[in-house]
Amino acid sequence: MSQDGLTPPGGPPYTSPIVGFDTGTGTAILQFRDQTSGQLQFQVPSRTALQYAEAVATTPEGKTINEVEKSGGDVLV
Image (cartoon, rainbow, N blue to C red):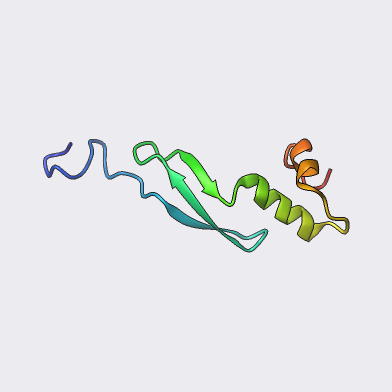
Protein backbone atom coordinates (compact mmCIF):
# COMPACT_ATOMS: atom_id res chain seq x y z
CA MET A 1 0.00 0.00 0.00
CA SER A 2 1.01 3.60 -0.49
CA GLN A 3 1.58 6.07 2.30
CA ASP A 4 -2.08 7.07 2.31
CA GLY A 5 -3.00 3.41 2.91
CA LEU A 6 -5.62 3.50 0.15
CA THR A 7 -3.78 3.37 -3.16
CA PRO A 8 -1.83 0.26 -4.17
CA PRO A 9 1.81 0.81 -5.21
CA GLY A 10 2.16 1.94 -8.82
CA GLY A 11 -0.98 4.03 -8.94
CA PRO A 12 -4.70 3.74 -8.45
CA PRO A 13 -6.49 0.47 -9.25
CA TYR A 14 -8.44 0.01 -12.44
CA THR A 15 -12.15 0.67 -12.07
CA SER A 16 -14.31 -2.43 -12.35
CA PRO A 17 -16.91 -2.92 -13.59
CA ILE A 18 -17.09 -0.40 -16.41
CA VAL A 19 -19.80 0.21 -18.98
CA GLY A 20 -18.85 0.36 -22.64
CA PHE A 21 -20.82 0.70 -25.85
CA ASP A 22 -20.65 -1.43 -29.00
CA THR A 23 -21.42 0.89 -31.91
CA GLY A 24 -21.87 -2.00 -34.35
CA THR A 25 -24.88 -3.35 -32.49
CA GLY A 26 -25.91 -0.36 -30.37
CA THR A 27 -25.47 -2.45 -27.22
CA ALA A 28 -24.24 -1.43 -23.78
CA ILE A 29 -21.50 -3.73 -22.45
CA LEU A 30 -20.67 -4.37 -18.80
CA GLN A 31 -16.98 -5.30 -18.45
CA PHE A 32 -15.28 -6.68 -15.36
CA ARG A 33 -11.51 -6.09 -15.22
CA ASP A 34 -8.70 -7.20 -12.94
CA GLN A 35 -8.22 -4.22 -10.64
CA THR A 36 -4.42 -4.41 -10.65
CA SER A 37 -3.63 -5.25 -14.30
CA GLY A 38 -6.73 -3.88 -16.03
CA GLN A 39 -7.04 -7.12 -18.03
CA LEU A 40 -10.59 -7.96 -19.11
CA GLN A 41 -11.89 -10.90 -17.07
CA PHE A 42 -15.54 -11.13 -18.14
CA GLN A 43 -18.12 -9.13 -20.05
CA VAL A 44 -21.89 -9.13 -20.54
CA PRO A 45 -23.01 -9.65 -23.25
CA SER A 46 -20.16 -11.91 -24.41
CA ARG A 47 -18.10 -11.13 -27.50
CA THR A 48 -19.74 -14.09 -29.25
CA ALA A 49 -23.21 -12.71 -28.47
CA LEU A 50 -22.19 -9.31 -29.89
CA GLN A 51 -20.78 -10.97 -33.02
CA TYR A 52 -24.02 -12.92 -33.40
CA ALA A 53 -26.13 -9.77 -33.02
CA GLU A 54 -24.02 -8.00 -35.64
CA ALA A 55 -24.30 -10.98 -38.01
CA VAL A 56 -28.05 -11.02 -37.71
CA ALA A 57 -28.31 -7.27 -38.19
CA THR A 58 -25.90 -6.94 -41.14
CA THR A 59 -26.53 -9.99 -43.32
CA PRO A 60 -29.58 -10.70 -45.45
CA GLU A 61 -29.67 -14.28 -44.17
CA GLY A 62 -29.55 -14.68 -40.43
CA LYS A 63 -26.83 -16.92 -39.02
CA THR A 64 -27.06 -19.20 -36.04
CA ILE A 65 -24.75 -18.69 -33.10
CA ASN A 66 -23.04 -21.99 -34.01
CA GLU A 67 -22.24 -20.66 -37.50
CA VAL A 68 -20.71 -17.51 -36.04
CA GLU A 69 -18.64 -19.53 -33.55
CA LYS A 70 -17.44 -21.99 -36.24
CA SER A 71 -16.28 -19.12 -38.45
CA GLY A 72 -14.12 -17.80 -35.61
CA GLY A 73 -16.43 -14.85 -35.10
CA ASP A 74 -16.24 -13.71 -38.73
CA VAL A 75 -19.80 -12.64 -39.42
CA LEU A 76 -19.29 -12.46 -43.19
CA VAL A 77 -18.11 -16.07 -43.78
